[in-house]
Amino acid sequence: MTGTVAVLGANGFIGCRTVELLQLSGWANVRPIVRRPDAFASLSRFAIDAMVADARDIQALTAAFAGCKYVVHAVAGDARTIVDAIEPVYRAAAAAGVLRLIYLSSASVHGQSPPPGTDETSA
Image 1 (cartoon, rainbow, N blue to C red):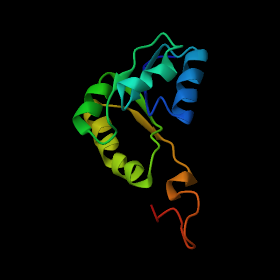
Image 2: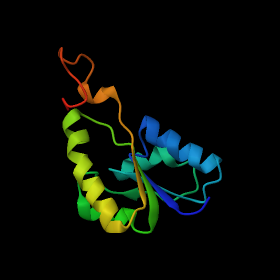
Image 3: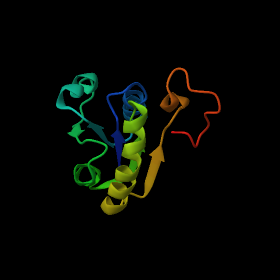
């Protein structure tokens, strides 16, 4: 495979598995991106360099995405963090010249017991 793929939220459950599968499938250049340096521990079994960037910081993300063809957005957290990260990630990907942004989401953005009437427009 060619091109560098960045995985944002690489220390989380889905992000870490994404990094692992990309590595095992022979993807040459994987760039894990985590919010805090102490999150590198979950990635230590891979011989790749991780970067630190908050998913809400356009400048840090643009630098982290530099040279990447693809970005996998696997950021989790509370609903506010998830929603607040969408625009900065898209803007940084565009500024860095990313060709494809893959956004992962789940119903967990609504919490464990969402109120009645909650749908995909509620977050």
